[in-house]
Length: 394
Image (cartoon, rainbow, N blue to C red; front, side):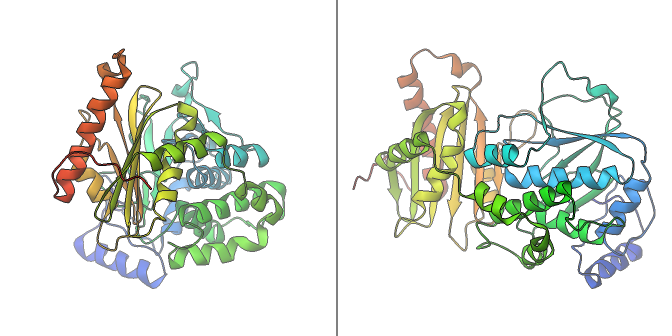
């Protein structure tokens, strides 16, 4: 939920680079004003190989931002595998809890080696860091100033502010996993799923594509091509097991609350579900997915207060004119650090707003009334209506 390139060329060279990339079937990217090379590349994978080859025998920290999901987990694993071929030692870390039942199953069943960040970790040993499947590279921790952003790969709407040695942002990709499948199929090292590690990565990538494209309903050509590449390497039994995890009872309960508190305004539905435990926050997005099935509704927003610390919201839409990324950014804007409180892609989005000192309020009922009134009024103003919150019961 940033389109800059490492090449720094003249206007004529930039245009030629874009033409070359298009002819090679690759997504072209604007040229960074922070380039470290004047090389011109025929494709993004060639550029990635050049960049990684230039930093051999270094240490890379691969960071999963936000709550780990199938796409950012899989793309991080693929990047780690590629880096190993260039003698780049890498570690994958994540900052938020793995709360979604399907994501916990992914990590457990595939025995994925990723580390939950804690303050005792010595991150000063890393020369570079990487971020995938995120609109911006801002981390919740401070790295050494000498630790440079080496790789940034994403498929969300570009913010136009990212500076990295290698940058690849494709809004015409349904998942970051598809982009990495393309890299793996064109790298200098054989990736064919013949060993356990490669089969594990291929299965993760396929799950990442399936998850982020809503079972290919929102897929682009690159996603179908990636699935074709990965299909022969996937452990299909394991993929089915991961994808068919039962829905937790707490998520079902939260969905019932969302239904009871739904507020329908035209073709919009809003639902504030109140206070939600940290381990149940993924249920907010699942509620939004379910409510979008209601006849006559094309946009749903479900939100709640998670762990008493921040407002967490999920948007789902079938509208052909609503841009989730712009819609959410227009409503909530940026925080004091200049980073947007939320964003999105073609059919979905999300936002997180810290409560700060308000989180210490002992009267939770009064606090929720204040939060709901504020959030609802922002929504109503955005869609051009006035009036009190209304609950539509069935």
